[in-house]
Image: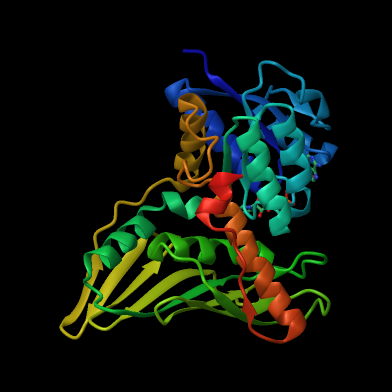
Length: 334
Ligand SMILES: NC(=O)c1ccc[n+]([C@@H]2O[C@H](COP(=O)([O-])OP(=O)(O)OC[C@H]3O[C@@H](n4cnc5c(N)ncnc54)[C@H](O)[C@@H]3O)[C@@H](O)[C@H]2O)c1
């Protein structure tokens, strides 16, 4: 079978990792070829040329829109460009994997879902922890009932970054906790309360505390920070019989009960490789243009954007916000 041809749009910090991984999947499986690498910065392209050697490097993605050999694009450009780039490719008949967050506004995210559906194309969101074996094991532990009645979850997503100018921490870091929370609980929050602050950049938050309330008295507390000196990607789930803790980076977890602490058995996965392969599987099986049909689909991405949007609105209005989301039936009926 011919390899699927995927172009990577945006070759910065994350885009380079994606190119590395996609090249490796191509080398080891023959299923994919990096068709082109696009970045509007010549400097970034020359870094890529040094690292990856001869590939088709482009400064502008528009000429790819009409390229009949191109199957899909992995979009790793800045968050503010996701909607425009993804809609251009979907309108041109190309499958898309958009890095998180899918878009900045939920209205735009649902428009992308609709475009993919209308054109029978795959839309995946880069919610990478869907492919994290630690998170999968934690989900299994919760489903087994070993924690008893669930009381609350705590997420800490922190690490040190220099002042980020126009970017803010909620949009950048909170997609992961909210995606994982949904994966663990199969629920979306109904209300959200958020407080956030910028210390070095007064106009944009560098730290935020988000309380997300779910049906059944379940609360998730999310801390996101660019100020903490320690990199942390942690989930704790507290229940009536036990507490589970997972380090999402190392994919190491423990279960704590009144009898003591035991390791959760986890064989770590290569999350980015699985994300790339999942996108290829979706394109190859062509089953995934419909909402809810892939493990990391556009509706999931859109719902995460709704939660982030409400969190930012909660800061602005200084109050708890109800989260509005279309139901699965409403989405399917469109
Ligand atoms: N899943 C994850 O864990 C994860 C981790 C990091 C970043 N990301 C996501 O990846 C995306 C990129 O983040 P980053 O940290 O690599 O940012 P970055 O700033 O390092 O890279 C973005 C690149 O896109 C290029 N670019 C800007 N506009 C473009 C356009 N119109 N066409 C082509 N290229 C364009 C820039 O020149 C830059 O090189 C973001 O959406 C981010 O949220 C995901």
